[in-house]
Length: 381
Image (cartoon, rainbow, N blue to C red; front, side):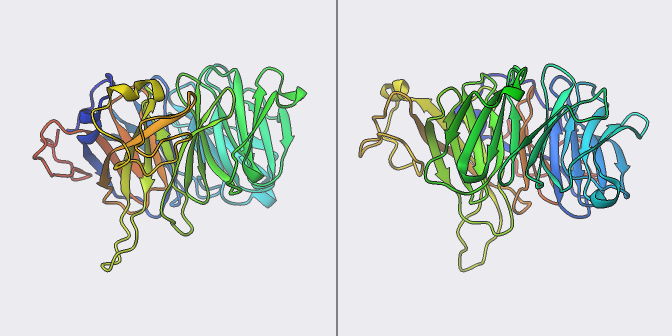
């Protein structure tokens, strides 16, 4: 059975050794979203087949599957309790108004319905410190909720498709909206309006995903035009960014590693004469400009990323910029990944399309085997 190790300090060698340790291929349709629990070794998924599935990530084991035919399963996130989640609905929003549900995976019950959104929820996140959570919807609103009460606690009316995220301390939340605007709110006094607003200059595409790094110093943005940016979370400066090849009708997710040293993203290669449409996964290592003196070779041969103030050989940068180096890339074996996240406490990430894959460091560099769960190879790791 696949076993994952606790997260130690990552380095380029460990990153390059990442390979598929387990595969779950029994979904019918695309996996819409997934989330890791912050303190327990658990993963939850929501998919187009109306299923919500709970996994033990330490042993790559499916623990439970529930089906939600009435409402469907779209966006999903854990609450603080390891057996309860918040899930958004795909169906009957106009008749029931039940856009969000508080679900118990322990006994397959709906603990509470949250009504308010008139259109599909496209962004959902839980506060890391209390029972508050946020949802962003195509009805151009962000709603703040409390798990303990049915009524919405606050509403923000915005332009375009809103995307939301809490920082890791739960003190600040970010809302990305139309035109590349990022608004920061104090989570304790959001009714007073944003205390800061950033603009992602030069990219008017909608932001489809936003994440804070664990140290709260950086934000990671992915846009619908497949551009990825790392912003300074305090001043909003664009520290680095890179563009992926177009993927029609598919958004690509990116994620920080827990130590904030690397960004993992999905990347579509250019269409070749063989009409390849498989997805590569790309690790980008981020370094402060002060570290450049320790590099053994110029970066310009490996860059492919925006770097403010860079010289021709890639070895100088402004004080607030980051140099990015592509560390590794792999064939995902699953097509375009709709979901991509790194586990908070493990040397592991998951990538998902209509198939769910668990990636772990491969201590045997000669091993090429994949583990198909349901027909799981006990000697895979």
